Length: 209
Image 1 (cartoon, rainbow, N blue to C red):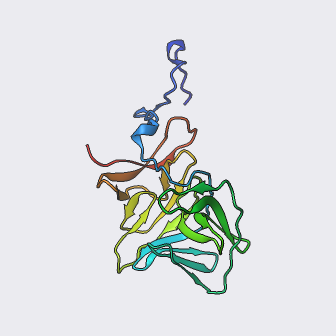
Image 2 (cartoon, helix red, strand yellow):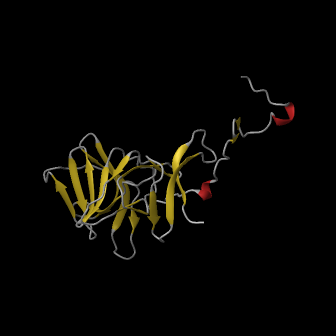
Image 3 (tube, rainbow, N blue to C red):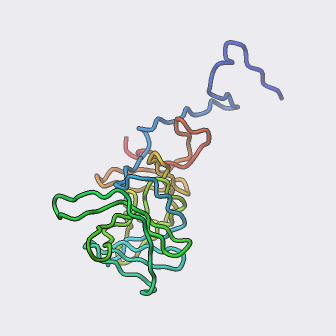
């Protein structure tokens, strides 16, 4: 069956379908967006992250990194080394330290956006940013002793696969998942289209009316 639109309807952007009309795209302000402290696009990929009793735990290409709240790093294996490039240094008026955003390279396949302090001795890692803009296919895992994982400003209580676009829109790998932000607001994953995108995707919309 061929459906022909009358001239008066030809300019409509919505697609007429059997049983109704296509849903209009959501505006950016209608979906959850994460504003990362990391200023650049870090593009971390294929990581597994979880909130553990000892701090943030990140698994990447056979390397396990745990960063405690005081910036103390534990690495497995303990012989692993990283490299980085110093970018524009900034001065922390509170601590008096020089710091910079950078990407840490552990071997050939593990790259992590981070904030480091640069002093006379070895650089000190202060924070990892696996949720930097451009993050792709990050596996959010749950430590049963903690019960949740904090990622991209959200509290996950179930395992999830998460990607973050460069404009901060958070994408999940499945629909119907509910998470909470730092203010306790609930968001649910839903397949839809966001204004400016050509394809539908699974994004987070408010679960509260």
